[in-house]
Amino acid sequence: MTSLRLLPLLHSLLILQVHLSNQLEDNKIPPSLCTGHPGTPGTPGAHGSPGQPGRDGRDGRDAAPGEKGEKGDRGDTGETGMRGLTGDKGHPGEKGDRGQSGECAVAPKSAFSAKLSESRTLPLTVGDAVCFDKILLNEQGDYNTETGRFTCKVPGVYYFAVHATVYRASLQFDLMKNGHVVASYFQFYGNWPKPASLSGGSLLHLIPGDQVWVQMALSEYNGFYSSTKTDSTFTGFLVYSDWKNSAVFA
Image (cartoon, rainbow, N blue to C red; front, side, top):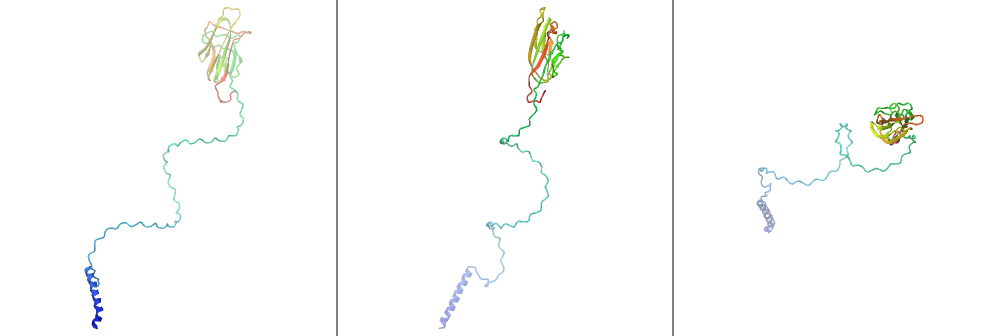
């Protein structure tokens, strides 16, 4: 009867012994069974791999505005950039108001006519200008009776004409421009009882300062004549002016 009661106790001891035997085989001795000195520290382990990025934190609160800083120094002037492309043509503007009426323009004028007086002594030297000394018309004062020369003030085209009464001698004269012969005229006189006539004319383009006159061609052919019934005249006038959109000239 006593043997039956000891069986559970023997069974528990057997289980405990098996358990301790397993721990000894696995080198897992409980600290409570044995105590020794601390072991030597082990070598550091290898670095682990980087962890996963953390999540973004929440935005912080806005700070109060800072004080305004001082104005900085002016920077250096930059290099000039390339010229830009031409822009598109703009739209036509609105029509402006009508301007005030201007003054009436006066066309440029220049004209003269003069004749030899009856008492005029004619030049006998070749190259001398014939001075038609009696003015018929010279409103602009472009002809000078002292020199016998017309001086241009208005640029343009002019017409000059010479009418000569030939008497007592043959006549040859030249129409001159700035010292150059423009045209020559000749009339033979054959001891006729009455005077003969010689006329000629030419169109000339002049600029301000140009001069035109009548000049003796040969000293022995000086038959200019003037009397109360017949005259010798020199005439010139502006046909048209070169001025365009010019100021007013009277």
